Length: 119
Image 1: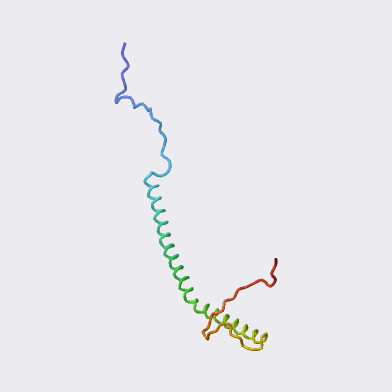
Image 2 (image 1 turned 135 degrees about the horizontal axis):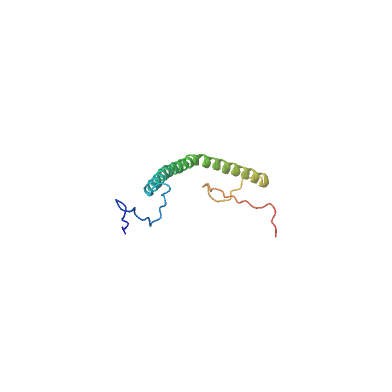
């Protein structure tokens, strides 16, 4: 009785692993994409920080340049209050009274008080 022999060239290999096709990009493409996104983020951050510093510098210089104007406005207000107080004192007392015993100018201090004192 003749024995069956393998086919010429042998049998095909037995598939014992799962044959799942790869989906999506290769991992190196994800790494490159991630690095590109991060590089763009750092680029934007670099220029945003530079712009924040420039805006802070501009704000500081603006405040420094407006300070003399604010000081002059406060001085005019102080002079107006001073002469109004002198006029009120002259109206009440009939003469100029000196509060201090010196000719040196003492900058007046004003305190806002309520019109009615509640107890």
